[in-house]
Length: 141
Image (cartoon, rainbow, N blue to C red):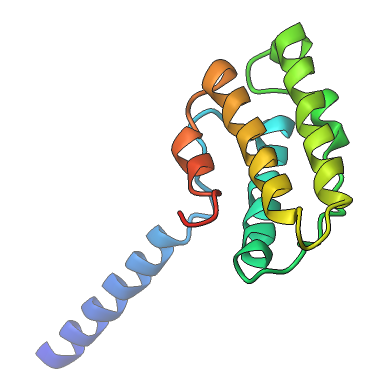
């Protein structure tokens, strides 16, 4: 009888533990929320990391990514994308991406660095939170 009670108690505890861990709520990774612009920036970072791998092996990266929604994505902080400074930097980033798209093996590394420089420049003045992550996009980091 004592064995059955221990077995049932153990089973109930395991069930309760499993149920408490599987509450279905997904924790937000970003403390600022998941705005359209934040999600786009994460996608841009993933694209840049892919391109970095190509550059590190001396190849021209696939750079056919479309980040033109920089101008229309809803930001975490309302009105931020309406600022002239943001618009200028977003256009400079898109221009750097165009240069990277037309780069050859001799110019790809420089074009990639220019693109990362644009990211860093914008974030240093507009949204400094991800600066450390952006610095890791440089080749050799």
